[in-house]
Each structure stands twice: as C-alpha cells, then as structure tokens.
Amino acid sequence: MDKRKVITAYQRGFITIQECSQILGVENVHLSRLIQEAMNNCETDDIRIQPING
Image 1 (cartoon, rainbow, N blue to C red):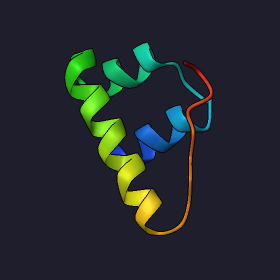
Image 2: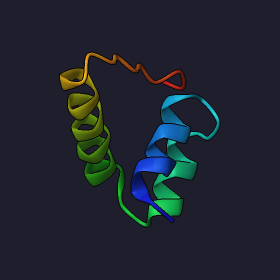
Image 3: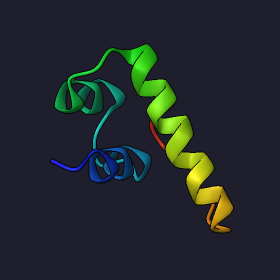
Image 4: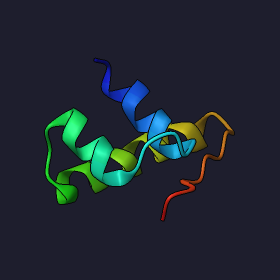
C-alpha cells in the first residue's frame, strides 16, 4: 500500500495514529517524521492539511 495514501487517510480522520503506524509497519517516532514530511510537502503546494485525531 502507498504510504501517502495511508498518511492521507490518517490526516483526514479515517484511521487512528495507531492504525496508521501498524499499516505502515513503523514506530510512532518514525511515523511522526513521515507525517510531518507529508504536511510540509502539502504546504509547498498551498494545501494545508491538519490531522483530526490528535
């Protein structure tokens, strides 16, 4: 599964941070970096996505 799709699902509130971590097979520290990186990429495209689930 594409990591970007999983992260987008988390950011839109479809899955929890724990589910996202399990699907991607990464620990929370690494997942936090992936999410931050994805958000930074979106900000450069003038799109601001904020996670719903804390």
